[in-house]
Length: 91
Image (cartoon, rainbow, N blue to C red):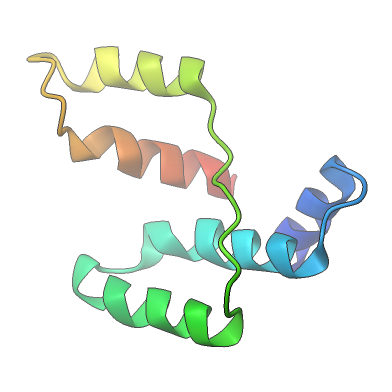
């Protein structure tokens, strides 16, 4: 977890540390959390970091390729792509 936060902090100079730690906690743990527990996890994050919600890092090219490969019927609500992207972010 700290390794992820450190790499995020080094990736861009001048970031607010609370934003970096929030992103690291959120992006590193969400792929591992069951959907039933997501409300509890997001509530904990909001309690620990009130008024902090940094944007997610998005690679639209990667998401597009995942969508084309994993959603053959081109279902716009394909959850497989979001799970794939979440796991990719933890690497």
